[in-house]
Amino acid sequence: GATNRPNAIDAALRRPGRFDREIEINIPDRAGRAEILSIHTRGMPMAEDVDLEQIADLTHGYAGADVSALTKEAAMRALRRIMPKLDLELDAIPVEILNTMNVTQSDFFAALRDMQPSSMREVLIEKPNVHWDDIGGLQQAKQELKEAVEWPLKYASLFYQVKARTPRGILMYGPPGTGKTMLAKAVATESQANFINVKGPEFLSKWVGESEKAVREIFRKARQASPCIIFIDEIDSIVPKRGSDGDNRVTERIISQMLAEMDGLETLHNVVVIAATNRPDLIDDAILRPGRFDRVVSIPLPDVEARKEIIRIQTREMPLDADVDLDELAARTDGFTGADVSGLCNEAALLRIRRYVSEGGELSESSIRELKITMEDFRQATEKIRPTSRIELDRYVKIAREFQYVG
Image (cartoon, rainbow, N blue to C red; front, side, top):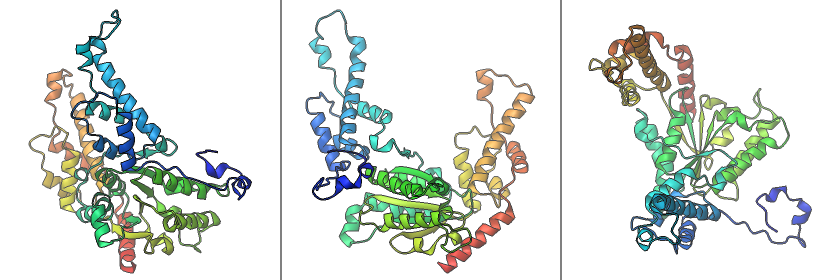
């Protein structure tokens, strides 16, 4: 028998004397994908720029059928390219046209953009497009994430040589809006890993067993789509300290299931769990033990230099007037989180549009091209945008310091 849902089969059929052997057919690894690609492109006319090894690198999470479909889609794109040259009234395609029909690397890249591997359909798995350069400041946090996630995937041979154990989990903590989700997406992009983004409360269910099943499914899909990063936001909502006032049997079962997945017999090969929280003090101590969340990374409020870098990144596509002073803006935004600074830049752009429309500005293409955001727009935006409550931020900073001291 064959199935892709073994746990849905009655346990009576899986006893000795019935189905004695269970063989799991996993998603192919990189070497397997390269071999499947070579088989399916064996009789295909390919251009010299086609690099099957690179395509194998880019198809993590693809089953054998997905790789086969990818090669067919690339071939169809090559065929569509020569269709305008064909005379449909002829019985045969001229040899000179056939000789020009080659599948190129661009055809494979275009097919990759339009295809979603089957292992990624049941759970929303992303391929994020956030890079380190898109995040201002946070140099220490970036370096810690690089060493903990990116390096083990990129330099696996070095880790094997020195027998270094790679971290299974990383906990990021800090005030809201400081860039925790952006950092997780950036490390997934730079590591060329898939990305599963879930919020802690999404695991919670009133039905017995459903919460643990959701945890199992996320980890199962991550293993299939490896290399993969599971990002759990608001993890404090599902793994609170056991015995606390808000603790209940559901969260206790989720904690047990989470520990079983991270400690389990089935290794988390090329799967890293990154969690984020504003309240690290509420998390159960068992989660933070070695072998689970090995690394704890603090994400602080941006200082003046980090705020300047965030403003530069947020405004790099904006038409700025020569009078815009990034140093002054960075000084004016003391106490702002990264999200607050981003909101400020957007508000300045909206204020400029409002001013242009109210002044009766022309809508001709040449006039619009002359439109620039001025320092006055930013000054007005700083008066309008209120940063996250200072009292609230101070509370989060205090919690983070206490947690860091205890940790």
